[in-house]
Image (cartoon, rainbow, N blue to C red; front, side):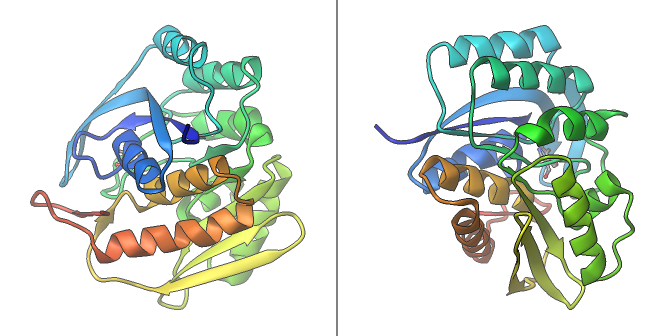
Length: 254
Ligand code: PXL
């Protein structure tokens, strides 16, 4: 049997981000994907128009019914709209002793639409970060989560150290672009490691989702977080180079 990865994330009908992007990424890495929608969005490649959160008791039921049957080797969370959802997810991770948790602390869409309610980042930090193997904020999310204004490489490192204090085994801050390159910083409490790529032209949708789901797939396959980071960076880069434009808006990784 293949390894199994679970995504708990929002639905993006355009397939660029959210659980659809996660499932495609799991599949591309040879991992069997399962998914629990936390939120439905109405959106196309031009942006998010509407958000409908699944009620917490239904999220709870989705997870129970699935997890009583299938045990994932790794899991990730993406868009979580409310603290109620986060409380349910924390309870299930503990109840089913789930391991290899990756948290993508989604805050805002590529087009600037807020994807979370007040209090969500605090709940994420307090309830889920201590359970996480890897958290993958981008520089904007790292700044919001830590209150550190990020202007240079030193600030990114400071934010990584502060996020590590919230309990995850590894912090990866993506999308530093202070030298005109796409730079990601890995920190495991001891070592820092930076990987960089050239920037590609155009607006891409779902890079954060593909990155964090590639890490999740790699953890399910038994990679260390550092090996997962290196592989996921390459997966995103390759998928950006072969991106498609199914609609009139942003490019979608493929
Ligand atoms: O890219 C962040 C993101 C995650 N999940 C869903 C989204 C988006 C951005 O639009 O719609 C469902």
